[in-house]
Image (cartoon, rainbow over all chains, first blue to last red; front, side, top):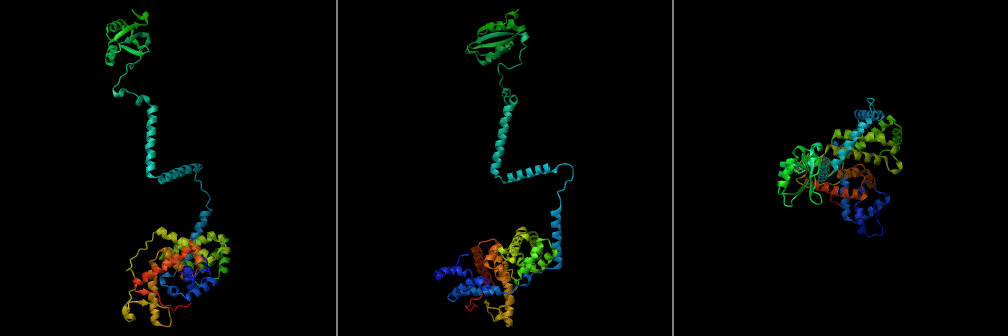
Length: 242
Length: 211
């Protein structure tokens, strides 16, 4: 409580003293405070009016509905609640089976805590986390499954080295150097015509290593040599040539 | 609240701490009516007050050993528990206190006091039948105005004017600073005066007071 300073001017103490008047009216102030307020009231009409109002409020007779009386019936209910309280306090931890319920409770408690944490997170943050999670999952899938997601075949592209690998026992190797202005389309058609597949290349000097089926080597070599787009063609496996 | 010899109450509380049910019953009949009346002022519902008193008594049973007479009066400790339980009950039942100002039980007939609509009430005098009648009407008006106050205002008015607690004890019961208690009481009295004025009642304006 802010102590009333006897050395202060009366007007400075007025607010402090006015705040004590309700308790002065009830006689519940200390003796010192009671005396201070009494002397102040001798010279302050405003505070005397306040005191009059407080005394009226204090003396207003209580209305019937404010009374509450204890009864044996009510006390019996109190005792019943007390019995239940003590019974719950004495109840030991119940295990219904030989299983270990603790872990199960931990799990449910974990999910409950997780649910509580999620509910406390702002919606914007939650949605951001979801989007980021989906993006990361998509990137992981792209990296882990390259044959499904990385293949360009579904876009209509076909590389020159695509195709089933040729059985090397029935294929010959040919080294070819194409002209610089040969188009990919012309190269693809030439390879189809000669039933050849590019296995390596181009090298640093622009040479390709091509496999040709052994039963088609003569025709393929003739086609290569007659093509205007072939600068150089060399059969590497001479023993296969019939 | 009529003063209760707290020596007896403190002794009973010590026995309650030792789980003595006879002492518990004696304590109930000694103190329950006091804080029950206080709770009735706040809750305005018999069933709710029954439940709140029940909660208070169970708290007394559980907390009896924690009461320290050196830290304050037993009634202060008890009313602090009652105040908390009352507020929790109010929160649970979501009481709304925005009643209509027209919800007034008794209409004053101006002809009964000579035609005046202004009821300036002085101090009660039990030997005057007219003032006794006005006392009943004032009591109803005060109860009606009291009911319109907020729970905080009702609490401080009740604890100060009915239960005779000091401002320090009210601060302990409500868990508020002393200046907050004084401010609340100031505003509560002001609000009461405004409400009474709406129904034609005015608290005494005379300077003839009992110092």
